[in-house]
Image (cartoon, one colour):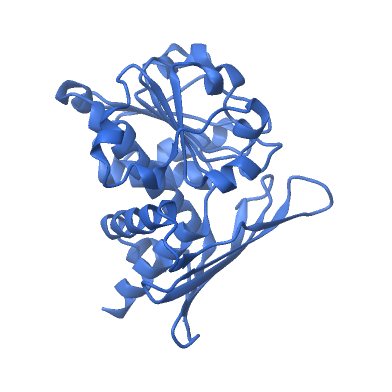
Length: 316
């Protein structure tokens, strides 16, 4: 009944996860009454960055319930640990327990890819698609998952890596050297190559802004997934508040209470990601020259989507 990180990675189909994520995020933003999700609880440990988190969710429509309990210790390796439990919402039966590290990493990266499809790919011409550059900042669990998911689902011309611990970047490049020959390491965040990036994924637990407006180009799309508390942030105020920036979130309610970049900058949220799904006009109205930011704090419906895909795959 328990499935470890290797079983999760082997059996969690990314195309299927994209499909179920699109459904639950769409219904979440439509306030579907069959989908219930409270704000997660976050208990700080000894007043430090370390925390215990609990994320429950019920989906009567699909017939499942899910709860994820994880610890977050940014200075430890791995930084997160815990379990995801999936239940039948009709009879309360426990269906599976799975490793939370891999589910969290892969559902977060897949949600970032969904945002990239809706906010970047749709506005790119063929030439930009053929020469697209991906940059990943932070090369631990989340950075590794983003590299894995983004390269499985799209072919990038170049990939740049940077990490606060450069050993992580070097190791990640080495681990993928047999699969990908187009990975380079940025020496620092003032490296001119950062400004060439079409898509940037920030995957750190930083409490200080890493990149600002002058470090990115017009039209860049950023997936900011690292911060989940008001004291954490990866993006500077000038980037968040620029008239050239449009901000999308996974959940307005969660972002207003948990996303440090939004709380500290008081930036305006344009929409939830679910509002862009099945809404081509909304997506197409986003100007080519605008910077788009998907600020994700991670919500329980995303864990639910991953647990459902895993369970239904294992049943076959």
